[in-house]
Length: 148
Image (cartoon, rainbow, N blue to C red):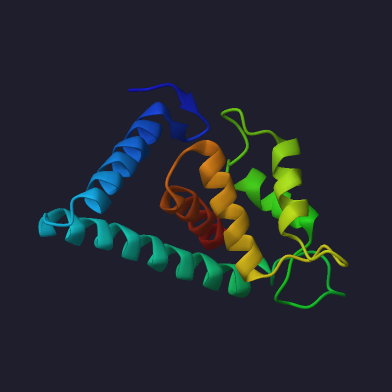
């Protein structure tokens, strides 16, 4: 197997690269309906995971946050970083500082609060930084939310 960085391995990177190449080939070759069906299934799976992550964010992660003065549907930038650490998303060249940069970029400008849409957007940025599909990052967050 490939090198291990937390739980993201080189094999994940290779698989993500193959999917991207296959996706590009699918877009260029519209005559091959079999590939198009598979690509749509992959995109649909990403959407399902995104919906599940957003639901877990609102029902579990926001409710378990330590600050009670805020709305119960948002988290702070600090809590976003704690979630990323709990999900083992820090590593493989992605530092806590990088995570903090993403948290600040997705938080509301005045308050720094992160709602469910911003949370998913932040996880997508982390997936891009790790060069893995969003579903891998989403599954980690779902696993941690089940443990809470």
